Image (cartoon, rainbow, N blue to C red; front, side, top):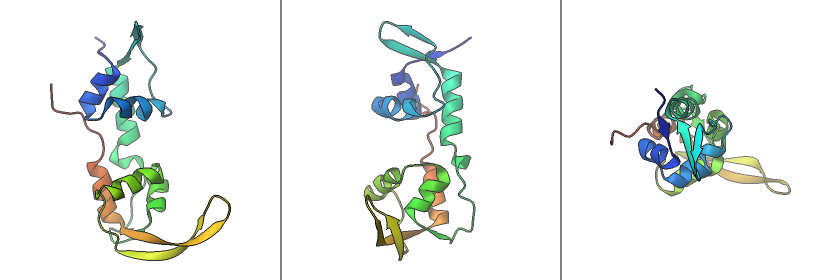
Length: 142
């Protein structure tokens, strides 16, 4: 028997807001199509949604292998795991990332030209732990 869920049901199940599901998750490649519509309400197959979330957000989705003490920048982390750099800088601004352990000068592509900037360095092992904890998991509520 197929279980159908709405955007709000999905948000509740994975502990996210409805707007995150609609504006972020549902716009990603691989998001399952709607199974049925009643009025303006869209319904999705729960099994397909669960498979999408597992594939898209599993801790092993990106390559964070390497020594725990390897120093990496936020851009390098984003490229390895397929996140936007802005997602990681948002985590940083909310204090959800560990403190940077150092800084390194790098050429960074600006809007018009390359710019030499000082960028923060993080220990790969600490970042790996934070991202694994942020992997969406079904809520135990309900």
